[in-house]
Each structure stands twice: as C-alpha cells, then as structure tokens.
Length: 61
Ligand code: SF4
Image (cartoon, rainbow, N blue to C red; front, side):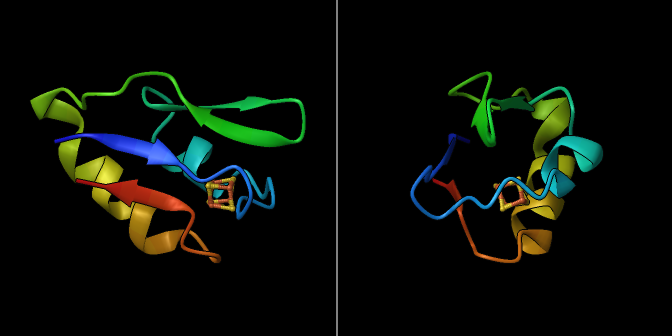
C-alpha cells in the first residue's frame, strides 16, 4: 500500500499527524508522508487518516 499527500490540497490541520505519526509529519505549514510504502502494521492508521482528512489530500494506492 502506497501513500502520498497532495500538498496543494493539504491545509496543515495536523489531524493525520495525530492519527498516524509513524507515516505523516508536519513540514512548514503542510504535511508530508515520511514513507512511500506503508508498513503492514500502519495500514489501518493510514486508512483512518485518509478518511479523516477534511480536504481529501491523502492518496492511498
Ligand atoms: S489531515 Fe489532510 S489537511 Fe490535515 S494535515 Fe493531514 S493531509 Fe493535511
């Protein structure tokens, strides 16, 4: 499972970092994904972060 953040959409609310700090981190006023490939143990958290993002900036493939 791969994850990335669309920086044009991200509003830097920080929700995904709270939900899934092993994957997402704040960088300046946006969030980036620290990894491209989500470890199996982090998949549920990554999906939850995607569902919670208010602007649908998290893309999972
Ligand atoms: S939840 Fe969405 S808008 Fe908020 S910081 Fe994460 S990617 Fe950005």
